Image 1 (tube, protein in one colour):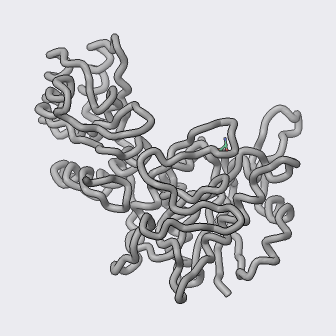
Image 2 (tube, rainbow, N blue to C red; image 1 turned 120 degrees about the vertical axis):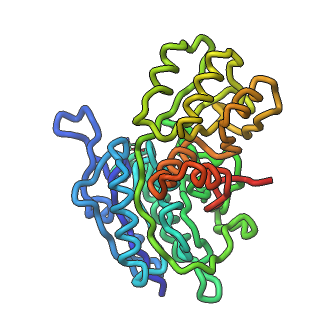
Length: 340
Ligand code: ASP
């Protein structure tokens, strides 16, 4: 029998109505498990661990990623896989952050949650939880099928650092804009084996440390020089995610390119991520991105904003050397970036 550790962080899946019945508030793990007696019927040894105080995922902070990473690394040898119950709002950030932290991962770490609390009649929580546990326990020749951080929601398994929250309403809350679905659950769970990360030769090691001195700047027609100056002249900021138009384009105004050039020369790491839901940045394709390229802006390729910002925080947390950080940003380290 395989053994799985369920880690409960909070989120809608375990929420109940507050006393005044006006808001949803996090509740405890026993409440969740009591609604899924079927878990006992699975051929899996289950253990559960809860955050001391379950939270809405909008309250997630990098120290919670550290807590998750530490739980997984301290129990790594005891379990064949891990299922993390997490709110959907910031799940894409946590999945990305964990993918970078869990170096040499050769076991499944599956994040899931739900759009309706587990106590509600039409809830999507039960199916998400049961299937996430089943996926985490799948093995072939005593090897886990999934050996990476992944997200399971409404019939689909996705690479964790490729997802974005898609809908506040639909049970299909996530999508993976630039990478195929890893598995589809219907009558059977069908894996797309070639798309899964291959087995790593590296020993498992937790790498921790995030630098939150980063900021995102969303471009829009009419963005003011004064606003851009406030952000780019702030010497506390080490990294900037520039959310650009189309294939990575921005205003060609001299003041804009000049300010970027000076900030980058000072050591700021600037990453170009498109505002488009799908596709990738191609700096130099249009004249309106040539200035960005010449200023030293680094292309984020087809990374999601969530994958890019957590990667930037992670790399800045590992090194003071901005040249190394830039090199790593354009390197595919955990399947977050397509390189051809
Ligand atoms: N606000 C909730 C959270 O992210 C939403 C959810 O779980 O779906 O914790």
